[in-house]
Amino acid sequence: MAGYQISWAIYVSDYSRYLPPTVGIRRTFIWTYWGSALGGIWLMCLGAALAAWAGDGFDTIASLQQAGDRVFHGFGAVVLVYSMLGLVSVTALNMYGGSLTLISAADSFRSIRPTSTARVVTILLTAVLSLVPALLIGADFLTNFEDFLLLVLYLFVPWTAVNLIDYYVVRRGHYAIAEIFNPHGMYGRWGWRGILAYLLGFGAMLPFLSTSKYTGFVAHAMGGADISFFVGLPVAGILYWVFARSIDVAAETRVAEQEAAEVERLAQAHDRP
View 1: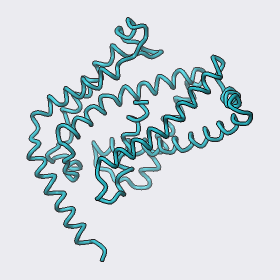
View 2: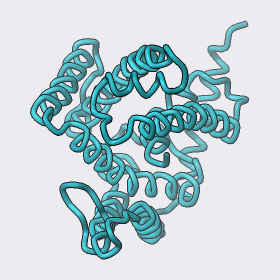
View 3: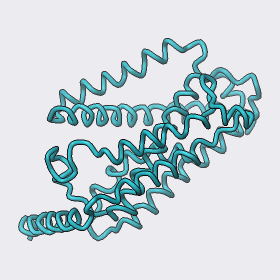
């Protein structure tokens, strides 16, 4: 459940970019969280029930349909239809997210305009990078796919910790947006504090990981229990908080407030009568 919520964090700007300025951060967070959480919880409960009813023989679409029919006759077909619709929508969002990530990564080294051509190319590249491994591991797809999802979760954990500490503890939501896109500005091209805290946080998780491909010595001693989430989150967060103590937050805040005032002035000047 935590992995599901964290994986949607990269889309947070899409929820808020069109909201009026009177809508605060608290309301945006609460309604976004509950919409996302409740939308996933009931499906996870249904999936757990279907998997339990299918038993150890669950390995095909037919098994999913048969499990659905255990609820009532014909419900298996409904499950398949909605599973297909959900898969299509999630795949579209993943292609979109992959495109944004590739464009952002390329822009870190060389300025790039997110034109239609760039988006189509990155979406196609994302599709290829997804399809080829899926075809290569088809014989044991579910196990390998589960390991991949766990890897994504592991990578998200320290990243989330750094983000949360930076936003709520260090800079308290004050950012100069224009400076983020200036590699020679006050934020610099690379945030060494965040990168170092991320790497150390991920390294601290390694002994606690438990997958079919790799199990850390602590997880092995605990019978395969994986508590890496509860290690990486505080380690990365605390380290970043320590590293960030050298940041002149007051100076950054003044720049952010000046930029916000200028943006508001320009917005008022172009306000419709």
